[in-house]
Amino acid sequence: MNKQFRHRQFSAGNPLTNVLVAIGGIIIIAISLALGFFVFLGIAGIVLLMAVVMTIRGWWYRRQFGRTSRPEQEIRRDTAVRRQTIEGEYREVGQSRNDPPDT
Image (tube, rainbow, N blue to C red; front, side, top):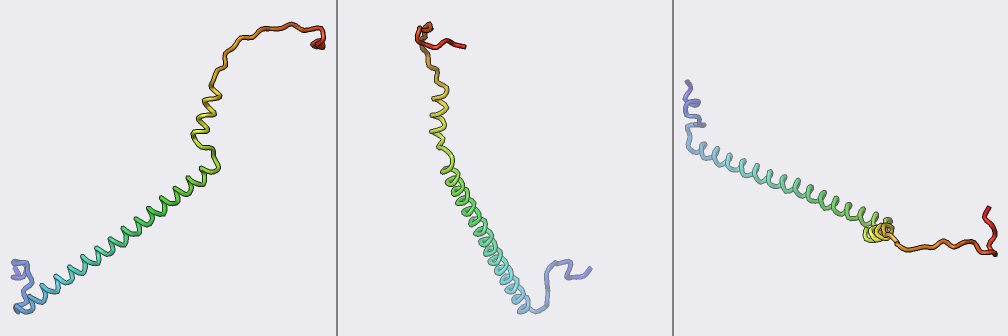
């Protein structure tokens, strides 16, 4: 088998080249991590902005629809008044002579 596959490392034979390859790899990895971090911050910012916009939009709609409809307490009060029962007594009174006859 080839010596390169047995040891699984890049061997250029020159130590200066090996150091430059290692430094280049570290720089590329650092740039990739930094770029990924900033892309993540950008996406998180967009998501946060959309959440704020949707929250303000929902608050605005609730405020607009709240003006046109009656408040919930007023609806409850009207319902409670309609459900009340009035109790009392009554007495039938016969017709008097001055009243016109029922036909």
